[in-house]
Length: 120
Image (cartoon, rainbow, N blue to C red; front, side, top):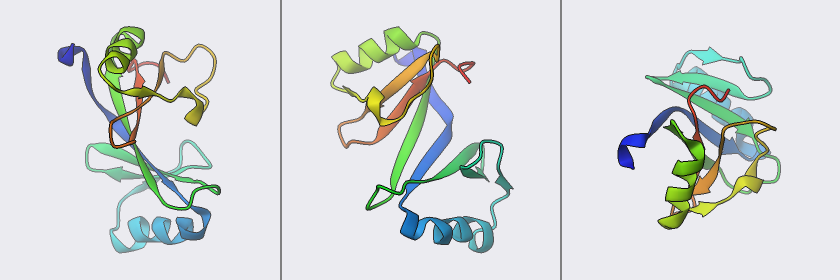
């Protein structure tokens, strides 16, 4: 099964409102990462070979990191992950009807989107 799941390109940082502008300024002005804004209102930065999405999360008290996994068969992968201890958490964020993927949490409660690469 491990050959059917691989790391994705996207990293999402969910940041509380009271820290959001400072975090944006940090990656833009201090680190100097190239920005992009193709999926507003999220702001993003090119993070080496990855994309760092920074989402304002008004109801959060602290920041979270969310990761992405690619698979050719999201249903099989999600079943495999759940059978092996990952917690399904599809309620964390709506992915839209017909989206070929879902959400899981690892044992440390880090959220992962598991999706087919062409699901966007």
